[in-house]
Length: 132
Image 1 (tube, rainbow, N blue to C red):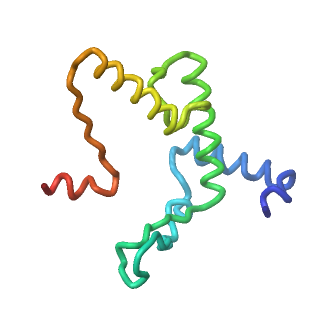
Image 2 (cartoon, one colour; image 1 turned 30 degrees about the horizontal axis):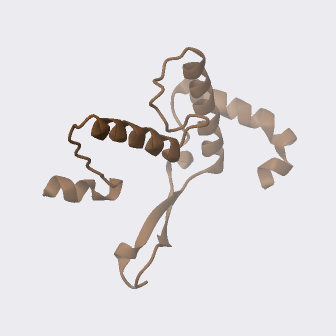
């Protein structure tokens, strides 16, 4: 809210800061620090496994990241450098469109009489999966 109210006053200093950071190829140390907050999911509040850690980082850093991400995404899309199967961070693509395409492919495989094995991995389970 503060940044939106002071946008005209802070736009030029932020531009200078962003360009300096980009040209030097490094971020200010404060931008690399995060405050980790536990967010309760479900179950007993006394069990630490029922919390998800959320990293709170600098809003200014997040703004710079989004500007860079948007520029890279636009560059890649204009030059058709990304496959149509990519769904993350692409306009009009989402987890749902990814799932619908996968379902269509699986149905097609099964309709042709082939077998199909599917493995689902949750990012939080990678460590347990590797241990097994």
